[in-house]
Length: 153
Image (cartoon, rainbow, N blue to C red; front, side, top):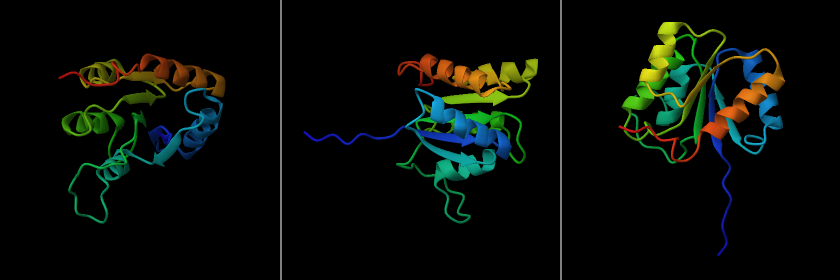
């Protein structure tokens, strides 16, 4: 039997172009993500468009065969925040199982409560060095075991 290997698909939602580029460089050094297919969008609105496969302005969210295996999202973004994106994902039946990792340069106590209530799979404060970022990314992947990657209703 001939099996075709599929690359892990990761959706990165980051409005800061410089940090998005740092993430891309870091992925190349990650034992978990070096071979991943990375798609980057600028904010939560673009992420929803991507997840819905919206072409034009139909606004209908249909199931898509190209769903990412993981979403890595900034929290503070224009148009639609990472918390609003996570809430939308958890309320969308064919997406609510997706693992979501949130990151921010600073997380307020209220944001932390929201992160927990929305069942983010992991979150971290954005580190300042690539080595620290790599450590966080690798640790988050170690935490996402298949049985833990799904949201329990």
